[in-house]
Amino acid sequence: MKQGRRSFIKTAGTFGLALPLAGTSFFKRQADQPLGIAVIGLGSYAKNQIGVALENSPEWKLVGIVTGTASKIPEWKKRFPSIKDENVFNYENFDNIVNAKDIDVVYICLPNGLHPEFTIRAAKAGKHVICEKPMANTVEEAEQMLNACNKAGVKLAIGYRCHFEPFNQEVMRYGKEKTFGKINFMQTNFGFKIGDPTQWRLKKKMAGGGPLMDVGIYCVQAARYTLGMEPISVTAQFGPVTDPTRFAEVEESVSWQLTFPEGITVNGFSSYKTNVETMFASCDKGNFEMSPAWSYGPLKGKTPNGEMKLPIVHHQTFQMNGMAPYFRSKDPLPDHFSGVEGLKDMKILMAIYKAAKTGKSVKL
Ligand code: NDP
Image 1 (cartoon, rainbow, N blue to C red):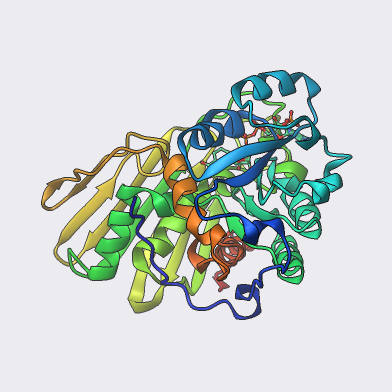
Image 2: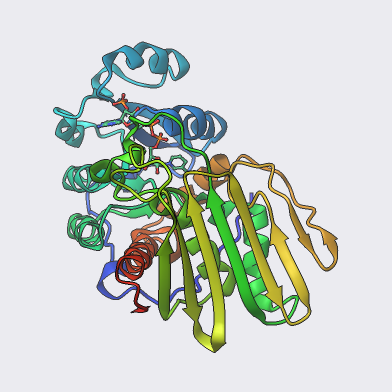
């Protein structure tokens, strides 16, 4: 299966230099053998999306799990008989994963606040990492994760599934080839009505922030990969707090305006109070748009030529199939789905918060 890719992002300086760890089982894995993977945190995303991808993809074999909930183990072992007893870990004994020679990569599906700790512990155990978005809660943590992976000579990917998904790949192409002329303005919105008021997504320590960290990151990503440019400054505003109990620790909604080179503006909006998921690009020769743009779909889009007709795929399966060859290779991961990309997003997300808090434009 051919997966499009695009290295629009400048090289990453020291963070791009992930060197393979000599002697890991990883590079001894035969080209015709699936890569061994362990999933950490058996919640909704692991169960309903990454689990499905691992069932579908011949490139990967789920051989381990890491969970704090022992009652989930039988269900996972029944679903994946490839999970070995000795590869079932909890958060306390996780470091023993160093002895699991059949685990090449760990996939971190934990709440955001736990991504740094488990990335760093996995790197110390010589395991490559795929970490869910957002990479971390702060820029400093993201840098620590990259440094730990570079030091250990392991790769760090972020679960940026849209880079492997046909509709999003197509808008990257529109931007790159200027299919509808120069893009002058984009509007990107992603929000949903959040449920359970006790969930980790509403706790600052676990989530890092509110909807911006959770789904607003898709808007920031879409702006960057559609334009193939990096923003130079941002202004932002928090929305009203209509539910002070639920939103005591994180924002309820936030709007932002990113300025890109060539006078391009991208407005963004993210919310836990309303359902919205659209991207719109105004170009010299017409407009293109997608809605839904980033959720599991089916995605839909329109251009001046009519409806976008592209395959509807399971994003995470495409992501895992698409990432596998890069984990088999000794070369560093391409920046666009690596920790380098994650760090760039973290800097922009933090700048949006700073702009919203101070009411001032923040340079990037
Ligand atoms: P869930 O709450 O459904 O699952 C998180 C799991 O982490 C829990 O089930 C639990 O697993 C484990 N965990 C360990 N410590 C804690 C803790 N203190 N509080 C809560 N859970 C804990 O979250 P999601 O699966 O929705 O999200 C996980 C990650 O995936 C997040 O970073 C999120 O941003 C990302 N995500 C990415 C998506 C994408 O499209 N790329 C979509 C959805 C989420 P256990 O019981 O096994 O210990």
